[in-house]
Length: 388
Image 1 (cartoon, rainbow, N blue to C red):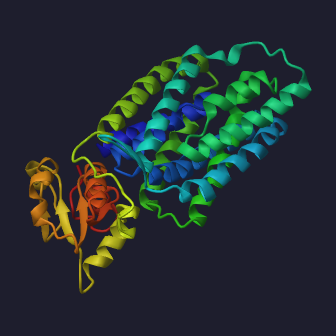
Image 2: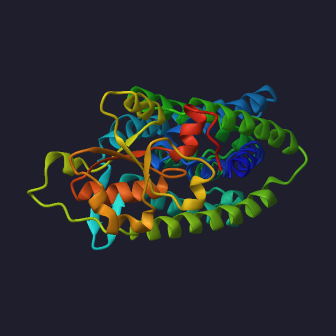
Image 3: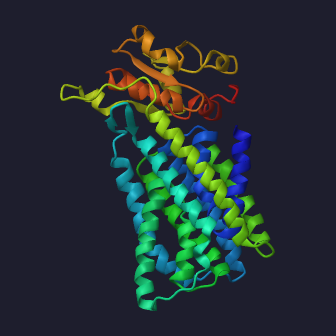
């Protein structure tokens, strides 16, 4: 699965370099489903990857005189404000568990992915229709205000879901700043780089842990793709590629929305929180990084490790001294878990164990979920453990 992830990283860079956007919309799903990051961690890592990739592309275009720095400044200033506010203050202040509607249990990560999937659907239609070719008709003063407003809105979106927003920036630069398509593509890369990297700084300041080896590897591959895309842009029609890429984004968006909605209704069903819920239960489950788990396992009172994967997965890799309770058996084996003991759940990428952890935490268990699952453990703590 990780090999597929690296191939998609090259595709993301190729799209950024060739059409100035589109590719970054796939970065968060790539990090979540191919590499097992949680949605909030994935958006932070996505900002770093997209920012570095777009920066290399912008520098390459800048050397050839394609970047309109005046238009970039007019768009980037309000955009930076939006993205930094979201990553530094709004996102960290949201609770991990937002609300429940019957069998539907909505967490911050799950809502983020659903909103991201919906955004992908709108982005795909923008790319498929390719409306950036339309003729601008507004006065320069009205266009400047609209450019600033759209800049702030794009920055807020970038900060919320970790997408660069190129599918919004390019049409805005063409229609409102009235610059040619090729220069809009180059200018878009500069705006994306500034937005993403400053948003990432907000994450670092809020104390978010980053999987640096993964971010570095994906960034390097995406940068290579961006440079190739920038070169091919001299010979290939970006409009046709953008339309074709839009269909890929459309399919991915449908997959993300459908998958996360189904997971939200998965078992076991959480117990509604009441006024008698303890303070620890009100916080519900927390994620734990592989590094934190490694340190906790060496402490005098290590947590209980519970593997919620299927039996055939344990033949590939497993953590030592764990308890195996497959996800579908959790409801019938709660008696094996002590509410007073600390429990850490894990699976391949952290998605299934996260669902179980949410449900157990709502029932009063002291539970944490291994962020990124056993694959993240293998990448960041013990490389002898096999990934799959």
